[in-house]
Length: 434
Image (cartoon, rainbow, N blue to C red):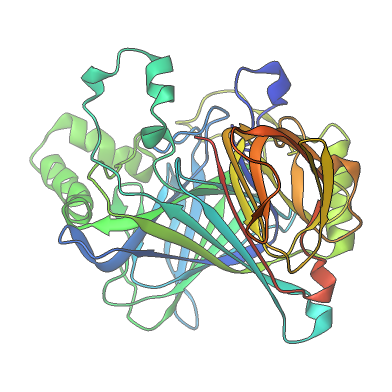
C-alpha cells in the first residue's frame, strides 16, 4: 500500500505500506533514459489520477474523477475546465509540481528491483535550509505480458515487474498545480481528449482537484504509444460523426469516460528526477503531524461526479513523526550513506559511526522498516529510539566489514542524516525488497 493513498492502518490488512515519505510542498520533475529507437526523442509522459485505496498498481484505473483546469499564456487563457478521469502530459522538459496547501506530504513509490538515491545540499542562505534531490531508478522492462497467462489476483500481485513497473509519486490534495513551459513537442490530454491552444514558449498551468491524493506516473514516451494517444480522440470524433452509438456515448461523457490508455510497450532503463524538493516549515509540519496523530481522518475533498460511485469516502492521513523527517516503509535490502550517524550492534559488538564515514548495509530478506510507523532516515531534530531498525544483514563501515557472511542479526540505532535548517550536504542510497 502507498503511505500516501489515504488507506486505513495496514495492521488491519494483508498489505503493508511501501515507499518513501517526503515532508514537502513541491518539487520539479523530469525523466531521463537510455537512447532507444522506440522512444519519441527526449519526450517523456506523466499521468495524474486519483489512486485506488488498494495495493500499488502501475496499471490501475482511476478510482474517482478529478477536476482539471488548464490555463496558458499571460494574461491567462482557459483552454479546458471540467472533470476527467485522468490528466496526461507528453513533454520534453521538466515540470513544476506544487501542493501542500493543506497537507504538506508526498510519498515516493520506487520501482521494483531498483534503488533510490537521496541527495541534500546547502541552500544559498542558511535560513532557507537544505535542498533535496531524489533520483528513482527503473530497470529495463519488457512489454505487457498477455493477461491470459495470469490466472489469479495473487499471481498478478506477485508480478512486481508489472505492479511496480516504474517509480510513482503520490501527493496530497485537495489541489495540485503542475506548471511547465510549452514547446512544439508538448501535448496535453484530459482523458482521451487532446487539449488544443498551447503556444510554444508560453507558461502553462494545470490545476487538479482531487478527493484526497494525486498519483503521478512518469516514464519515457514510446513513439507507437504517443501516436496512438493522439489518434484516439480523433478516431472517436470520426466514429461519432459516422453515427456509431458507442462513440457518441463516449463523446457525450467526454474526458470522464472510464478507462486509461496505458503504455504497455517495453521501456529501457530510466530515472525519475525530483529536484528542488521544498521542505515545509517546522510549524507547518507540526500542525500536519498533530492532525495525523489525531486519528488522521479526512473527509472526501471533491464531490462526486455523475460517473463516480454514489458514496463518499473517508481517507486517513499517513502516520508521521512530529519532527520534519524523511523515512521509509517496507523491507530495505540496500542502504548506503556517507552522512549518517548512529551505531551498529551485531556479532556481539557495538560500533559507532558518524558523518563522513560510509556505511553500507546489504540484506537478502530486507531489514524491517516502517511496518506501521515510518522509519526516519533523515531528521530535522533529535534522533529517537523510533529510528531503530533490525534484521539480518551484512554491514561495513568505510569498506571494513563489521560482520561477515552469512548474514547476521543487526540493530541500527539512532539513525539520522540531515538537520534541514543547517543545510548539511548528504547522500543516501537505498532500495526496498520488491
